[in-house]
Length: 415
Image (cartoon, rainbow, N blue to C red; front, top):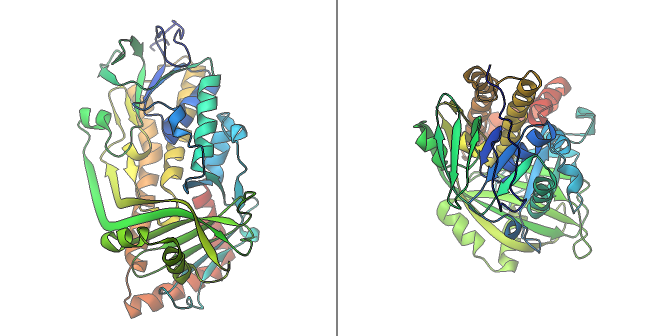
């Protein structure tokens, strides 16, 4: 048994001053890394979190069109981490989801799948603005005496069987028992550990933005499968300027996506309505438009000597069902549960046996989710008439089986 280090955190909350040894050093302060830091700190562990970017500029002053769909399980995590209660803007519950199939400009197939309020005892998830989550995470990070924030800064990590040594570009040196890679899909710590990655390109881009609309959404989301890729409308809390507001996530082939994203507002709104239909009335684009290349990838393993991968450093999936960030939060739930339990028993948080338990708990489930999302994209992302009929019958069949609907819901909610 290796005892926890006994020196405390001496750095100021903005990263000035010396840093004492910590239990866990997290590299990457995005939503996954930051939520892990907050959850571990609430559980009594001492944490350093390092990011190349300064955190306050991430708090965009105006609505920029980006939002997150937070499933029920991850929402509980953010609550336990002291983050959810700090959201500066209201969230919007997702209480109904309609899944349909069709072509742009045409009525959707009459065979569909709908998840309703009777399929769960709580909302399926909540929509929150990306900037709102960033503000809440920053506030929680800086409010905890168990967290030192080093941002902007960069670290050189040396890992041995005995522990982790951290040297930052700003000149600080301190020890940790475990390093966590939360730097995203191109994780330098993962590459340093020579952990292989398998990538699955989709030759698609996702268009992300928001629209105001004439009619209320009633907390209903739409997942509409189209030959070029899925189109999702996700309900958001309204504002004084836009009382009826939704996020959109829209997949297209690379060249088409770039052309669509560059359209003037009226033409862009027309293309959205061709895919979403008119159930929300006239739509008006709001905020910026964002375009992201789409691919899936998975790391061959999630752990190495005193190292754990979380979030996109470990896996990335097609956004076909909004599970990417939620899978990262599930990593946080599993790893934080193990580390907090180890602390209560006085055990080493970087022990190989603990890391193997983390990998065993997360990787098989994540691989199944990746395979499911990849399969859905390939099944629905084509215009083959035989496959169209088969998948429409499949959607309608699930719609008529309440027990199967509820099983799908539980898996997607992460509860």
